[in-house]
Every structure is written in C-alpha cells, then in structure tokens.
Image 1 (cartoon, rainbow, N blue to C red):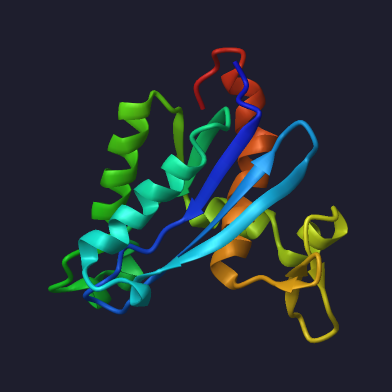
Image 2 (image 1 turned 180 degrees about the vertical axis):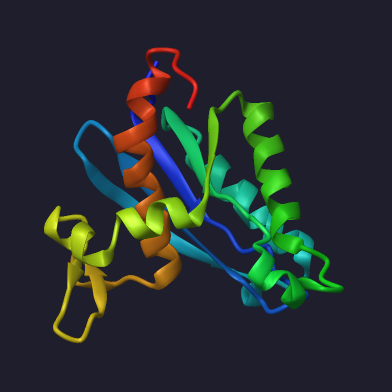
Length: 175
C-alpha cells in the first residue's frame, strides 16, 4: 500500500562533534506538495539524548499521518575517511534510533544515499517543478519563507522516493 505522506529526513546526529542540524519535510503524495517542514538543531538541546529525542517527538507529532519515512543514509566515503578518525560517528547512531522507532511503530522506512538524490534533484529542477523558489542570488524559499540546505536535502529525498520508490513499493517490488 502506498502511504499518502512521506516524512523525509536529512539527519545530522552530531551533538558532541559540531552541533548538527536535521532538516525534514512532510510531503503529501496525493497533492504533490510539501505541507510541513523544519529543522531540529542540536544547539537547542542541553544534551545529545534530548537532541535525539526531538527526532522521536517529531515522528510522534506526525503519528496521525499515513506515512513512510525516508532518510538520507550515512556512508563513510574513502576520500573523507581520514576526517572521521576518532569520531564517535553520531549520525549513524541517530539513524539507528530512528530506524528502531519506525520499526516499533510499524512504519516503512527507506534509506537513500545522498549522492543519488543530490545529482538528480538540483535546486533548478526542484524550482522548475514548483517545489521551491530560487531568487537571482540562489537563495531558496517556499511560500516566501527561506529554506536552509538541510530542508532542501530532505525535499530532494521526498521527491526521489515519491518518483522512484513509492510506486514500486505498492507492487511489492524491492529496490
């Protein structure tokens, strides 16, 4: 069954290592519109667990929506491996928390690599299709409200999932 809504997340689990920001959006597949979006900022919480719990509270706040969850994957690329030496790898830990929460709630979860969607869904493409607006300086907005890069990436994930995954999921096809 196709879920009507997609909760797309561009997560950053970093709390100790840089105060990350997770961008998110809720996409309505029936109307082909982004109906909610926002960010969860680590700097707004006094500890890592409160920050991570904010992600669970987001899912909880959207419990009334028939939704799938799509998340940007965390992959350690060879050209960036040296940057991660001695890292606690907080983002993969957050992914595990979100995946487990989706499992507990019986929600379908799909993980997508960033490279897959960033190349396919540029800001120009998203603007052309009417999901976002870009001004002459490249600033992005929706309905006159500025949209940060993490939210833009969550939109890319939602649109990619809707276009290439959701319709196959309903037919039982695994991709």
